[in-house]
Image 1 (cartoon, rainbow, N blue to C red):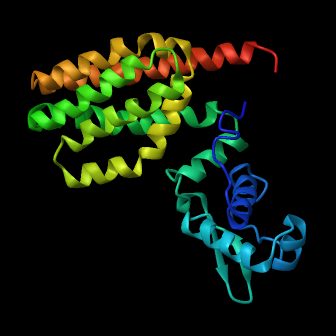
Image 2 (cartoon, helix red, strand yellow):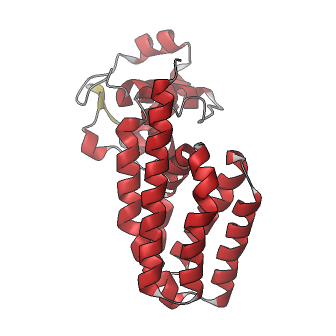
Amino acid sequence: MAFGAGRFPRRSLHGQVAHEIGLRILGGHLAPGALLPSEAVLGTELNVSRTSLREGMKLLAAKGLVESRPKTGTRVLNRDQWNMLDRDVLGWRLEALPTETIVEDLFEVRRMIEPVAATHAASRRTAEELADMRAAYDEMAAGGDDPAAITGPDLRFHRAILTATHNELLISMGALIESALVTSMKISNASPYARLNGQVTHRPVLDAIAAQDPEAAKTAMERLLDGAMEDVRLFLAKHKEQPE
């Protein structure tokens, strides 16, 4: 199941180069340490100019996937250097590999950060920040059964909580994990279970932060994430049972 297929548009030739090679790397067809074919070979294979090819390689290098050296060529870097939280890298991983292989990682990252953020937000939030959370929640609730309508406000709700921590490093970390948030929300919000339970799980978080109750906010956020993970498991299990 390649849930992310088609979700990451390619608008330029060098973007197409990065996408094609990124898929090969994330899918395991180009292993860490592997030397990529020469520019002439890749250019012919992908039907792009040398300039587009080099620009595509720069994109991949910026994401920690490859390294180019004079005379020795371009090699795939070790996995511990890959920026797994980059939006494109996540997309390529979802497109190249079964969704189940990444879902657990995404929720593990969220569970490390968001309950703590909710705790701090409850004790530090301003009236304006609370109003931002309420607005995002109300918009998400108004989205009904439309995943496209609820993903945006869902993300804004969680980002508003991070902002309300007033911790610059935590806020910056939120920016880094935005891709993880978006990807996991797209998966969980595609589930009918999530659409039914979204208001139920988000409301206690909002209420606890409004009441400035840190412990209740932490517990509510943990339950929200646990519920979302269970929604995803149910959705993926159901999808597996259905023929392609």
